[in-house]
Image 1 (cartoon, helix red, strand yellow):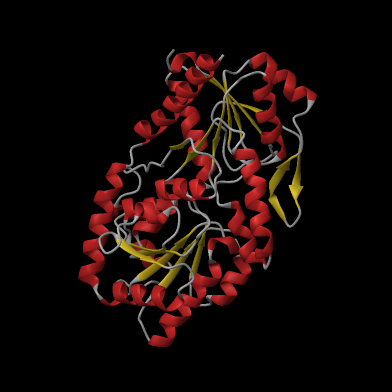
Image 2 (cartoon, rainbow, N blue to C red; image 1 turned 60 degrees about the vertical axis):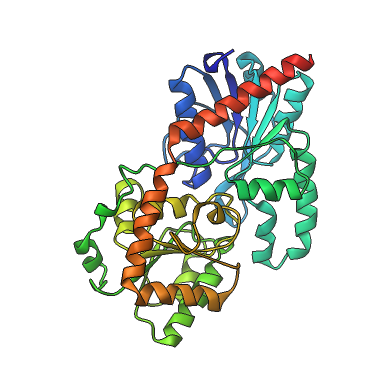
Length: 384
């Protein structure tokens, strides 16, 4: 059996409705699998005006908008129409990528037919409760996730640091790694554009701290703002550029009145915005990999990030950036100040970050997922 024999049913909670690191990785995986001769069918909620065109065949599943976050939708059920389509497609492996009800039903559907189930884990969902004063629900969420993950044949994690967290949480003991790649031909240091900086009122010689991501509280917006305020109290020269949009945008702007909010940027525009900054500050603890961290590194930016799953597997402390205990405002401010004041160190770590990003090549990364599919199918066949 080889990759051309694969028939993959992929279930996603957000395949192309809004842009995020997880669905960009899923679309790139599907593109790779199709190019190699595999058959793939994707099942996900859909909207009339998605952020981008989906890669491959996409089947819409019943869904409803999330209250207060209408840009996302909750998959409701594996309807008879979807079940019929799934049966006609006859997958030999099911890949689920979110712990929603439809994915759980799809996993149950596969188990009844002795079809292996792989689950890629893209987000630390249990940590979200910390940002909405609901931390007491975190253990319940962990138990709820474990019930699904233990029923899968294997989990696929985007970083070794996150895989270790999953092992410690007893989620599963067959955990493969599907890291992320970066388009180094797009994200590169020579995208730096002095004219772009000036158009946003950024001085040539003032260090610029970048934030990149959706503007939602679980990205650590409060920690970011508190750390920037600490820099201001210390009188450290700096500017801030915020790249992204989201429901917490107004709140973030109120906390960072001097920052330049440049909105959503994609492709070469994103590369230009990143390369035109001088460092990335990523305080989030919810990511399981940190695509934004890798994109910034490819642009030659050193990174100050939370020592958490995701960035901890990418950033080499003291070489390509600094890792800080989550929520440590003074420590974040210390490292940001060091980069702001020491231009030579900033450039040295940025060059090392660019070099480190070369290790993340998409084809080899996606082939590892295909190899996991093939292994699970062979294991299931041997067990009868």
